Image 1: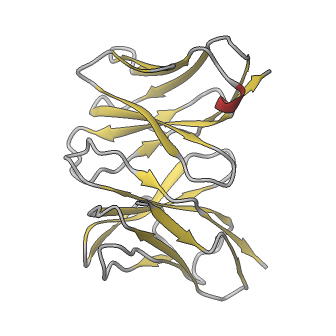
Image 2: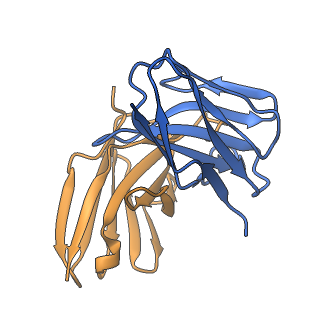
Length: 114
Length: 114
């Protein structure tokens, strides 16, 4: 089955700790995205990558880092610099067609701070 | 600056009746719009899209209407079913975008009562 997987489903972070959220897709999509959802708010773009070994900051990149070493994988690290990391994190992928593509989302990871 | 706005946080509708979800945008350069449906603790799933060259797109029970002059789009669900109860997000793509970046509204929670 083609799709996007995110792990873990729940993640707990201690103060001052870096944590990494996994995102894998087997849809052969070139582009991948990370969003953050907070209660009562829409999805806000953290980082995106249109091709392997290249990524761009989104609207709220501070305190986050990413890598794109493989087409299938786009892990997100929430660093200790992110002061309010508690949120629902969503990964998405798409096959770019000059902005007409549909993004497909994974099931999400909920990050909680201990 | 919220470029895509869903001003109704929630909507309650009786089963079998029409649900109308609204979305307003401020940037006239947006030329592609999408609706996503999201259940709690899951990733959004794509519902329907519309290009700015059209004013209506229909897919089964779902119809999206676009009024460019008013910078307004709406999603109609007819007839509404209890399984439609979810959060609905509208999203927009900038006409000059080649990154697929989506700008999301805050979401509207739809409750369909049996």
